[in-house]
Image 1: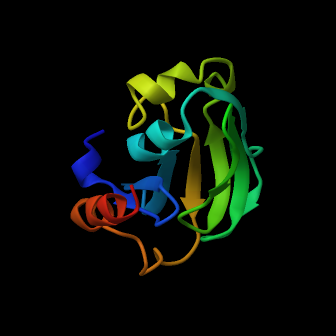
Image 2: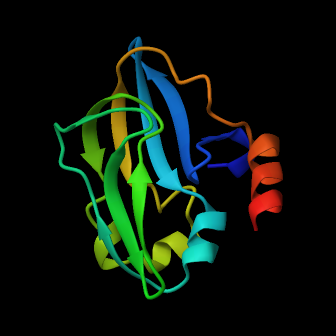
Length: 130
C-alpha cells in the first residue's frame, strides 16, 4: 500500500479502508515512523478474530528492547482477520510496514472517526514530535 493513501491515528497506527460488498473493511498497521522510534521489536500481541474493537481504544501491544507500547484501533468494529505470521517475523515491520506488515482487518461498524489524519497532517505531527 502507498503510505500517502492511508489515514493515521495520532498514536501512529495506520488504516486503509476498502468497500467489499457494501461493507467497509479496514486494514490496520503501525507506521514506519513508529517502528523506527521503537527499534528492535521483540514481541507483538495480536487481537483475536471475532473480537470487538473500539476506535481510540487499545487492541494489543508491541514490545521493543526499549519499551512496551499499546496499539490503538483507528476504527470500531469486529476483527475478521489477523496477520498470524507477524509476531514470529517482526522484521517485516522494518521492511514493509504498509503492506506485508498489516496487523488486523476489521469489519467497520459505523462511520470512520473524524480525528484520523491524512498523510500530510501525519507527517507534520511526526516532524513536531520526532
